[in-house]
Length: 319
Ligand SMILES: [Zn+2]
Image (cartoon, rainbow, N blue to C red; front, side):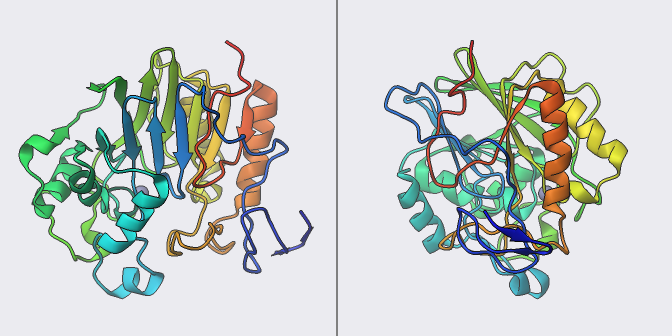
């Protein structure tokens, strides 16, 4: 990749606008999963992750509609059925066991009830997330309210919820306290409870961290080899908060591999290749320098996930 100051020329995901920088690491992207993989994960931008152990599958934070910046700023938003259907087809998903929301902001929970209805999945999340499901008309028996430290069996997958926090400053704080029926203003998608979500299949476990915040001690005792780590606006956090994020999320679970998420421009449709957040919003190179230094010091394998491609997140990790 060639780069000049302030201008990225090209990257594997496609051509990017001047003033934007996708995350890069020394390590190449993980290879596509082969037939023998006993757990695969597919990243689809933001913190959307499809996890599949061959028997059960779930989607964390499905975000496909991606309304544009102007609509988000001044209009009303809601799930876009046609776009979601097309993304599910592209993912090869028709049935799901669960749809999990790590918190209730629109880019994590807005599409979740539609995906649940479309795939017959259980919608799993906080009280605020269930209000999004209720307002969408999802039946009560198709929703599971979870509290911190709850573990839920989803087919052959065990899903454990740890208390977490949102990166500061938190947009739209508070709870969604009444059923939310879209289209609504973006501010109606209040953050609600934040969770770190661990998904375990046998001896293998991945952690999905939906926002770059942490709660001291919340992940102690939840060993997890692979973390899908949200890095959005981590560059704007204080250096103490950044250190805490690494310690309380990556070190606390004993992670051996970190894949960075929530770095792409969420106002851009998924019909286009992912593009990073503009530099004025987020200094991604600064975040990657911070992560690379900590990863090297702690023997953690730092990667950038390839979108739309099922991978074995444990490939190359011994034990
Ligand atoms: Zn959020």
